[in-house]
Length: 267
Image 1 (cartoon, rainbow, N blue to C red):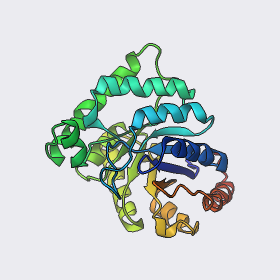
Image 2 (spheres, rainbow, N blue to C red):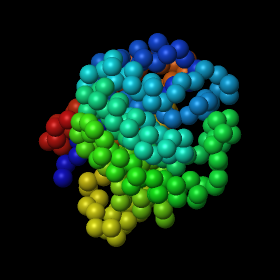
Image 3 (cartoon, rainbow, N blue to C red):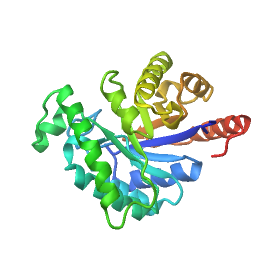
Image 4 (cartoon, one colour):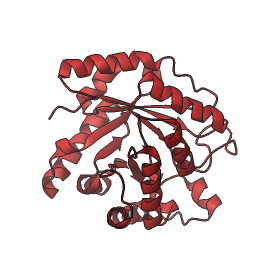
């Protein structure tokens, strides 16, 4: 199975006006991004802790209206913040707004300030992962029961690298997996995920692997070859705050297209 290389732009909804974030989504699509994502937090993750910030799913609904081609989704929606049936319904609704382009990114949650300020129980890392494991089947059942249903079998993305539980959940449920770390860590985690897939009877090639491209390598598309060799084919770039410049992205689009042509794959 030849999986095409794809490029995602994660627009961090912090320290910027909504109009600037919207325009960045339009520009990312125009420059050739395959996927546009945001994140699911209520406060900035860097810079001024009480700075400007916007909510995940309402922003995605707007991005769905102003784009035409790119897939859209959160990297990742926090499982703790919404009832799982409601979360499925929200994703389905944005899917219809977009014409069937939503990726449902999910994670167990980790940012304590969000939990404290919005009145959610923070619990522990293991308890949040256990809740994700419990809620994923509920989300999938609700997606199947909704009228109207999503416009396609909605891809589920799971973010996280916990080797015992999170990667087992990924093997059981995910279509896409986002991994954190350098090339060596990505390669190791991919091997662990492959082992979980073998245990549950899943073809590991059916799970697309996503990884972030560090800012230090943003001007160097050749770094993409290192990440692809480690197992990632969906490469994700974060922008946000006061720096929404995407002029550097064209070089990565050229690299992607050249690599995909050489692989004989079609985007």
